[in-house]
Image (cartoon, rainbow, N blue to C red; front, top):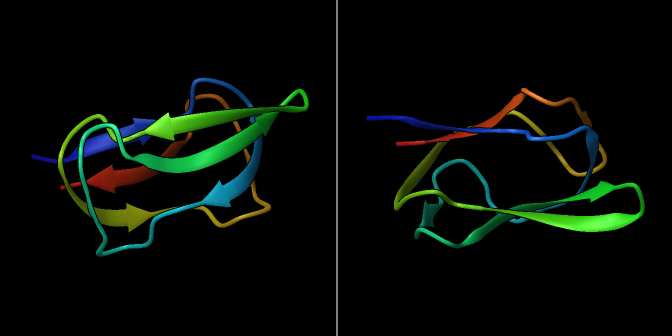
Length: 71
């Protein structure tokens, strides 16, 4: 089963802490967004492996974008 990580708000990708193929555990920080001059971390919702990564540091994301998938 694949879990998609979706953005809850618009912002810049300040730090991307994972790459495709990385193993993650529930609660691990996947990336940090800059939203209105605040840092907003996104955590893994489940254990698994990052199968798809659609962003890089410096990219701009919009609410609803699928950032990555964990399989």
